[in-house]
Image (cartoon, rainbow over all chains, first blue to last red; front, side, top):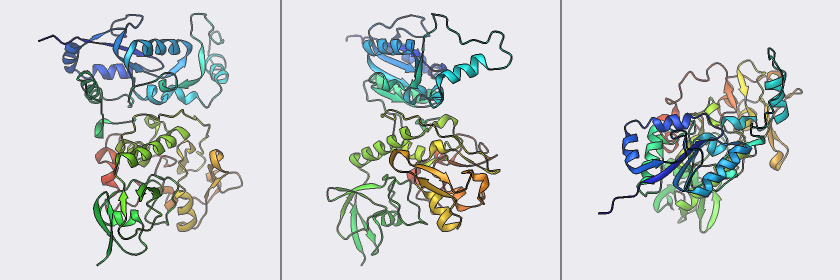
Amino acid sequence: MIEQRKLRVATVSLAGCFGCHMSLLDIDEHLFELLDRIDFDRSPLTDIKHCGPCDIGLVEGGVCNAENVHVLREFRANCRTLVALGACAVNGGLPAQRNHLDLGACLDEVYRSRPGLACAAVPNDPELPLLLDKVHPIHEVVRVDYFLPGCPPSGEAIWKFLADLVNGRTPRVTGPLLHFD
Amino acid sequence: MSATFLLDGQPVSFEPGQTILEAARAAGRYIPHLCWHPDFPPHGSCKLCIVKVAGRHVSSCAMPAKEGWEVESDTPEMNGERRALLQMLFVEGNHFCPSCEKSGNCQLQALAYDLEMMTPRFNHFFPDRPVDASHPDVLLDFNRCIYCELCVRASRDKDGKGIFALTNRGIHKHLVVNAESGRLADTDFSADDMAANICPVGVILHKRVGFAVPIGQRTYDEAPIHLVAMRPEAAGDD
């Protein structure tokens, strides 16, 4: 019998809070089962900086700056199946709550007009990625194969989803596992 | 013997004048809906109750049942259409469930769960809709309004106050408060009004009770909307 090739999985947090990655760790002992079937490529768990060819890409967070766009496009180019993981990737989530405000006014409010700031200026280090005018769900930037909403999706939901995916089934998360909050 | 039609292949009997949705409900069969309420005439605006009759899409809340009709409701095609309608409702407003105190009691959210809406699919509008916190007992968060007009109808027809209205048309349509200032505090609105307790989403919120029932123990955490809506006490609100 031919041993099954391990699937390569990349994960990233764009404009997210790493809560979905924490929830991924919440699958607890299923992690052992999962690691029998997958290897991690680029991920906060491996610290690999660029994504190679992968079977599955899990994207947490929406797109709020220029770097997010580049990373997301790299994921799309390299991942056969791209998954929007969690509320921010699915619909922009909390970061997108700035979308009805003017970006310049937001920066002013945070970096210049707040009382008690030592040197009130908007950070402009060239290493900082430029912010986008609006925060976008990832499907507004690249094609996305599957969506798993939730803030964050529970460990159970993530495990059901990943178990379906690595076993070749169409991922389906329904009933009590499906939550938007 | 009363007349019958077929709903997804099963016979449903009806009285003359009953709509498809009313007859289905009386027979214990659920058809999804948001703007329909048993205490009011059909509104036919949300279109979630869409069914297929003789190749045509009709609003089952407004269409009188007819003898011998074959009505399709719980089919992949109809549920797909409903999902698309929900997706349009979600992207048109700001429906940010993680920060909404109606989460778990919201009919829009519960229907999205029931119909397995995994993505908003369309591009979000992210409209700017300031809230009205002027009233001492009730907060108005217009971000979540779906224009079902239940509060408009309840305030006008049941409370006799006419506090709410929809103004403008098309994409510019929005909910307004009938006061010179436009503020809810400058009306005789009361938290006991029917209009204060009928919003299917999270626009009209009672103050100081937001998280009295924790997330995870709310109406649609306990049971899906297709069961909750069929309970005898379900009047359409939470």
